[in-house]
Length: 328
Image (cartoon, rainbow, N blue to C red; front, side, top):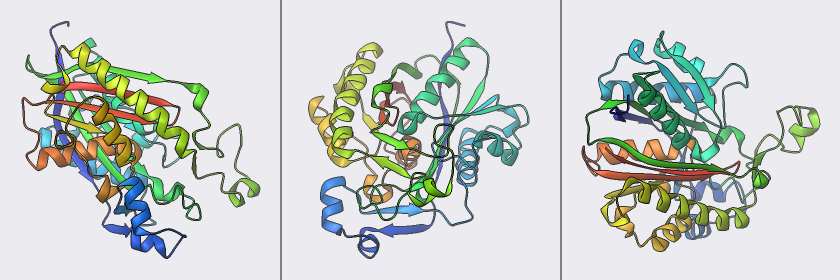
């Protein structure tokens, strides 16, 4: 099995039609278009309809990825779905997607690594392919963060959007595929990014609902400092393990959390911003979905082609972070 290479066979994404601009937010909370754009790089974000669940948008992205890979649903051996905004705590959102797709031969489960979820999922998928326990794995990053946002909190409601991205991962010819990765966590920072209620520690109650404990809370200044260091280190380590250098990378696709974080990482690693894919201005922070959405967009735009050396890097609640390097 040592000679098997695992790579991306196809990609797909979905963004809801409804657009929420910074000007729209000015009517909801005390903020301004200039303030949001200057501090985050976000101009607008997409918002799901009330009757759209996380599995619904994941299913659309997954169907597009399967079509792009020319793979039938019944050929999928496993569905790994990364999200912090599941349809239900039980069953997994991945099982809803499995039913929607008709992927009758697939095991299906969710992972919660927040914004790092797609990299964690892809790392698991690669390991399954190389181990021979699966031939084709569907990895999805999908979020409906608008349903978990406190729209009275101007520090967080400006950040988040909804969307889904997916990739089919399977065996590829030698010279392609995932070369190296690094995934890390530090549970001592659990309070920095958190949805406090709805779990066993703080079950749902009238008080948790009225106090907004079911929405995302974040300590932004502290997150910024840790995110820049961890993402820089993990991307550097993954590139070094791949045997390449930062100069060899055609495109870095970072988690789209904040343009200042992205720029700081690029500067520290001496990577020109023209080789960093950015779409945060259009979609905001879609957590686990940002990297697969950006990947699909870059491929469809012709910016990333077969044989290109690319890298992913992300950071999220947990805290979790990681990076991976691959030849597309």
